[in-house]
Image 1: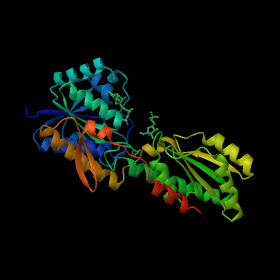
Image 2 (image 1 turned 90 degrees about the horizontal axis):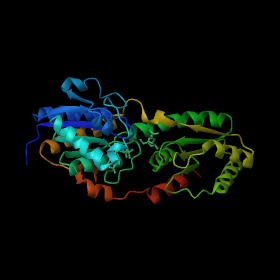
Image 3 (image 1 turned 90 degrees about the vertical axis):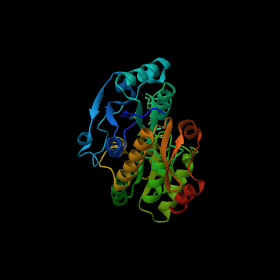
Image 4 (image 1 turned 180 degrees about the horizontal axis):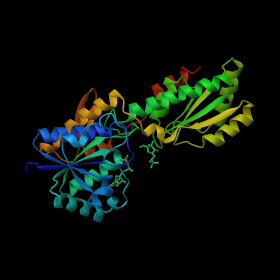
Length: 323
Ligand code: ADP
Ligand code: F6P
């Protein structure tokens, strides 16, 4: 296999705290391996626009503690087309890039797969606050996001108790309820609504609120995942049905920002270095993962075919502990 001389790195899809730590690790490990690094700005869109910069060890100084992504990110429809993918691979060749590290979620992996089909070596790194990549037990950004959400919910809980209100707190996760589940358990919520589990039986929630109030609970916290949404109208209906003041708080994008936790920095650093090592060694069409307590890599096809779901047991625990 031809020796890799220059690699590119890009971040794609939703940003996640810890992406900078991953970029830093890729850059520094590749340089240590004697391979040059170029930064591709704004995901696949930036690749197609040839927004490509040279990177050295200093380019990533003072970034490990920063949220967001220094390279920027984007969603790019053109890259979903065969022509876009061919153009992307040609631009890589034009800039002497023979391998690309892609930090993002499942969608970004499909883009990496396409580049690989067009002759550019690719390695994916799992970066998403949603924890919804099946091949890995950990995704960069989840720990920071879930801690941000948990701290915010603790604050809502305080005022909710003081006013004896019911609170619906909406957390991120369009298709995945991991942030909602973890906060449900960690914040001691009375109800947790997950896209994977919710049966839309609002009457059951209303009955639960009335039952808990009779037992003397001063607040009622409902963690609602973004995928279910409609928290404000839900609050109005619950207030009308229970007679208990009910407020909705939508945490929104604050969950995607902020300085990464130690856990995110650590996983991002190891995964970034691992990705640089296997890419420099000639691997392609693979993703780095943390599985069964160790860092591993999978073929992208195999990784995308894996399934992951909310554990029934953990979901039941979240309900049992709230009684
Ligand atoms: P995530 O990587 O977080 O899952 P998206 O699903 O939005 O985020 O994907 C990010 C980007 O990856 C898309 O905007 C697109 O440029 C690229 N992408 C997604 N799916 C494909 C695909 N099937 N083929 C090629 N590129 C894709
Ligand atoms: O990055 C994951 C995520 O934050 C999801 O939880 C959310 O549904 C989605 O991205 C929102 O994406 P956008 O930035 O396009 O609004």
